[in-house]
Amino acid sequence: MGRKSSKAKEKKQKRLEERAAMDAVCAKVDAANRLGDPLEAFPVFKKYDRNGTQMKKVMLTVFKHNHGAYQFFREALQFEIDDSSPSMSGCCGEDCSYEILSRRTKFGDSHHSHVGGHCGGCCH
Image (cartoon, rainbow, N blue to C red; front, side, top):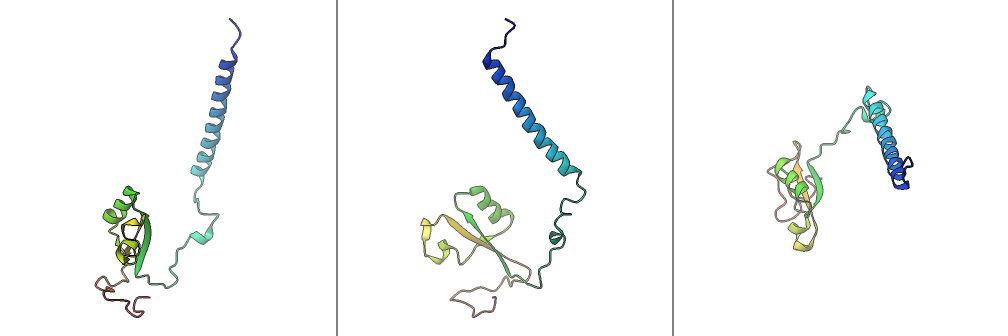
């Protein structure tokens, strides 16, 4: 009974491989945690500059079947269905699998709307 079965050897080998993989991952995490400034190697990301743009609206696309994301953007971040969304423009109706959501920024005029057509470039 002193012999180990091949099945036991396989299990032990698998455990050792899993442990080695976990140790390698933990070593990477520890090395990352020791970094003082993780963006030090990427100076371009040190300063975010809008380059003078004054965005009036932020837009995003969300799949209708992704209820968590849809609810998050609509309720938590106060995004609304944009006029260019397929469900609003009427091009696809309910057959479309996504919505285009938008939210005005502080530079956007919240009272401005495009009812009745395009504004002739006032917001572009």
